[in-house]
Amino acid sequence: MDKRPTIFAISNQKGGVGKTTTTVNLATALAALQKKVLIIDLDPQGNATVSFGLQRMIAGKSSYTVLMGKYLLKDSFVPTQIPYLYVLPASQELLGVDLELSGAERSQFFLKSAIETLTDFDYIFIDCPPAVGMLTMNALVAATDIIIPIQCEYLALEGVADLLKTIEKVRKNFNPFLKIKGIVLTMFDGRSNLSKSVVQDVRSYFGSLAFETIIPRNVRIPEAPSHGKPVMLYDFKSVGAQSYLQLAKEVLDREKENING
Image 1 (cartoon, rainbow, N blue to C red):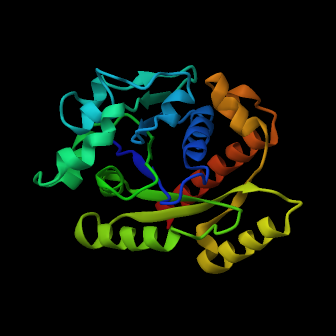
Image 2: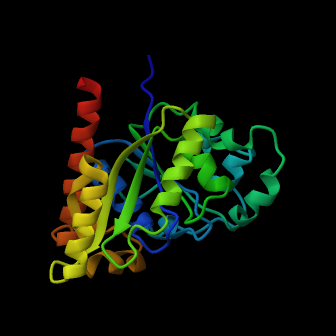
């Protein structure tokens, strides 16, 4: 019997929270632990694609053409320089998806249908755009779990309440099994009282849903994409890379708890 992959939607309606950074580096860390991983770049900006030194697709096989049923997913993703890790590149055509899918029957299920035939991955990550349109809706309907990055800065929880309402709507109407796998605190500055306050607020609000691992501010993390590499490949010994490796281990521990629980 084929094992179904765990499908993570990485989402937050607020931009600049470390969403793509978390997608790229958590996926890379799991691949480093010899898990077979696919990243689906569903953000028209294509930052996850560029982070691996790949180009956004202007024409040809991409997350857009897969979503629209023009190509099969199994024929469309490409390998990265990291063993076990593959990417389905973004396309500028994603910008028109809301208009193209408006009025289409079961338009929220297009990505789910595309993914369903894929059984040879352990994990699939969907990098969502920072807005709730048809792209994010497709990601949440296709996902088994959602990971929410929250930056340790002012107005950190802004937009999260709206995202939680969206998750409940998706559960009620389309995907009753969607779970929040965890909250990732990002861009933590240990010298800042504000950062410490945000950590306290998030842990107080979300309890055990907040991962123990906190991703610090580390210059290597934002430097890495400009070199077309995840931080783990750019500087494995950096505190940023090691934090994402620790987060990956924590994700795996939570997976085991679900299986055994």
